[in-house]
Length: 300
DNA sequence: TGGTTGATGTAGGAATACGG
DNA sequence: CCGTATTCCTACATCAACCA
Image 1 (cartoon, helix red, strand yellow):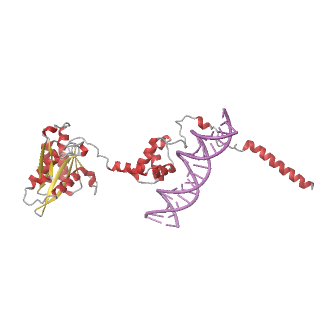
Image 2 (image 1 turned 90 degrees about the horizontal axis):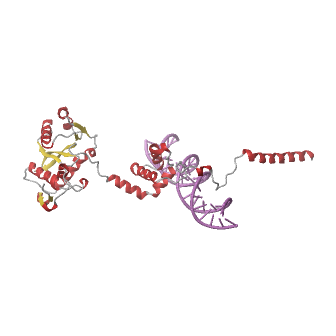
């Protein structure tokens, strides 16, 4: 009985003592709403529960729009780029941004897709390519050269062959008329990559740029030029005509008449000459190719 | 004035989906 | 089946509104 009493007292004492010591050893329970030390720190200091600044949200949405990744990957991308100065994001934050801002992301994707191409100086880069047109059930070879800066059609001529000499002759004629460009960009067609053509361009001081294999968009301006040309060409049934004359008419229309959205409503010739103000009073309505090519011509 | 409570925003781990 | 990416869940800090 006495033994039982002793065990009981010692056990109770142990409980009381451990409870009493725990006041010193255990971490005191923090009240749910207690003014913490961190509350007095400057607001610039990064705090994980502070609302993220707008630029972080914008960057996250932009990365989500261009990458198409999910929350984890986008968070990783963001932290890789901007996380070094303490502005890191968690994947949950990114997940909710992507989930709740689907419309904003779609708008961003659309804007990125339709972003106007980078403006380049006039007569710096020429895009050159070959295409074919059907005339009298025969395939005719056509060379096109477009200035990237002004979209001016430097040359649009029928070629007898793809031989380097023929191409060089056309390039030299264009240089004589429009001056020397810094770069000429072509695709990887064999005729453009011949040793002879490359050497001659090097002698002229022109750097030859080639697009990646199967990447026609890297020479997009000339491809777009040919796209418009073929669209117009197919609207008419040319039988008995001089191809060189028709190409010259189209080139004149493209350079002098047709305005470009990306050129601020100016024609390539106006951008090439640096003309900004049009004298609309002198504009004359012109039409060619049975009305397929038409528009206002503003004389100098 | 100071304590309580609910809302908000966030990070990180757990659970789940997916593709090779 | 395994590794990776995505989604969901939970804990936590802060703030504002409310109340005694």
